[in-house]
Amino acid sequence: MDFSIDASTRDVRDRIRAFVDTTLLPLEAKRESYDEHENISEDLLVTLRKTAREQGLWALQMPRERGGGGLSIAQMAICYEEMNRSIFGPVVFNSAAPDDGNMILLNKVATPAQKDRWLQPIIDGKVRSAFAMTEPAPGAGSDPSMMITTAERAGDKWIIRGRKWFITGGATAKHFIVIARTSHDSRKGLSAFLFHANDPGWRIVRRIPIMGPEEHGGHCELEFDGLEVSDEQRLMEIGDGLKATQIRLGTARLTHCMRWNGMARRALELAVGHTSFRKAGGEVLAAREGVQWMLGDAAMKLDIARLLTMRAAWYLDQGDFARPEISMAKIAASETLHQVIDTAIQLHGAKGYSKDTLLEWMYRYARQARLVDGASEVHKMVVAKALLERGADMWNWDAHHA
Image (tube, rainbow, N blue to C red; front, top):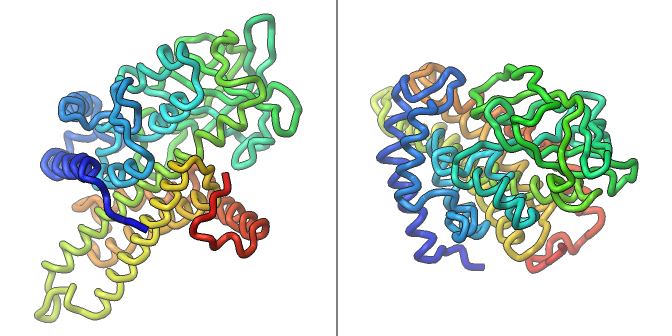
């Protein structure tokens, strides 16, 4: 096993690190850098995105021929982690959810014409996108088979009716991917469709208020009341909606982990900086055994999350679906993020609970990590299923189980 990285990847990582350290981190401390939803302001984002593009740090997950960086998934793990040492990082580099997952899906499965129409504008940063799958109860959540939204064929068109909610980015997205039921087949009953925000027959019911800071466009509830899309706007074959969802969410869950590991690193950096400076009883906090235990535990858990993330990324690069590996990474990275930030707040004392640091922002943001793209409990079931099916083969270092 070789944990070294090649020179070209190291160069990209180092340039991202320099951009984050010199440009993004200073902006986080300025109130005028934020919009009303506690995210980076649009005007500032436009300027920073232009700079990122000029420096060759734009859409690194996309093919070079479409204006991206052509990184493998393992390379993405290194670079995405570095980006999210700043809370502004991923969206500046066009590597934030949900656009990131949507671009990866469209690049894998869309037709050439669909890529030109629906993918390229997202890569270019001209539009934002959203993935509409989750529904209010009793509809689909972690179990897509409960899908209620329907798409009925009418000649060369499809008529979509139903309701979705917690659709990230819904209020600002222009390009949407929607999953709807096209038959009652248990495995081939769902299909995926593309539509534009200007198409009639749908509306945003509300922007759902949430605990933490919001991505641009929030988390919206949508209603479909006769949205018409042409058959050319169908993504993949009829009945491939579940497959499209699995393709998208597999990598998207892992890119979440990559970014969360970066945020956890930043929280730990803040904790180390504070405890190395703040004195109590005549010595710095970092010299105290109890503080060292807290820092050591946080560092160990973070490295476990990083290693699980990298292993899953490597499996995906080999063509494996890596379902249990992604689930393990998702559990570890999401829960570690929350634990590390909590530790950092504790070590900062009252200052960590205040808005004088970014830790309270991170803490509120981090709570969603154990829920989005599958709750921890769902992913533990995926891991258990793999264990029950494979037995001792679960522990083969060289196992390949696409």
